[in-house]
Length: 313
Ligand code: NAD
Ligand code: SER
Image (cartoon, rainbow, N blue to C red):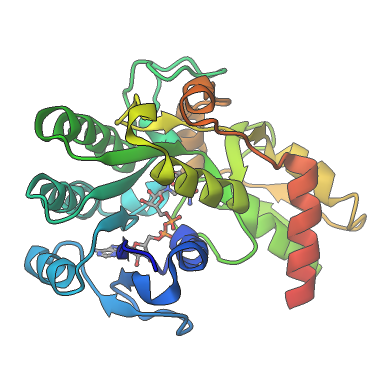
């Protein structure tokens, strides 16, 4: 039986929905507790309400449930964050500090902190972006994650906290719907194609961004968390990559399955955010340190997305 008891914060979101199901396969349903500020859509295992800003409640639940690891997913994403910058900072940054302090006080053993390509900015080289590059993010979301990365690094070096992190690219999956992000178009477009509707894309056709299929993202997360401590040389967010594409390129793949599918481009405020991020990522440290390897490219992902979404429709 697993001796680990895992808590996921922000677990009802796009990634948490899928990650919690995979973690339950590994550690057992009762050993993986999901939490969020909203009710889960389905009852697949233990759940509790935790607002990450309610420090006392989080600490009490972690102690009461004898949690050993926290996957801290709760956050407000890049596009939504721009509507309420101070709230976004509070949730994204102060929420993380509470979790890091649980590690510092020895109450939990391990923490996962998802960082993002939104930490990059105008001063970052955009093509094949290296691990250690200048970071000057343009969104409050990116600022909170870049600062969060530094605090993860500091808590590890100063207090020995076992915190692990990746800079996820835009994540695409058929199981859950994203919201509030700049990369959401790459999921929405499949739903429109399958529903037989024209898709209005909020990014311009040639905007290239790094992306990853959900099974790769979930596997990377669990592999990183299960790697021996001595293999983890970076505590502030490993670069992580699988593929990069533009709206025009994903459209070209989907149209092979739906020849009548139409797209129009109406860039909005998210265009400027996307242009401040990298186009492609060099993730050689993750590949060398804990043997990261992606499995899905655009073609393989499109086939799988369409197969799975058509089963549901
Ligand atoms: P999401 O927006 O789908 O889910 C975030 C969840 O956090 C939501 O269910 C929301 O209810 C919850 N939340 C918001 N405020 C909260 C609060 N005060 N207390 C507790 N929960 C709260 O996001 P996601 O796509 O599932 O992302 C999960 C994590 O991965 C986030 O930290 C995000 O920054 C990171 N990430 C995601 C992507 C992506 O493409 N999805 C890319 C890079 C990084
Ligand atoms: N997919 C996320 C967003 O667009 C990147 O962190 O906000």
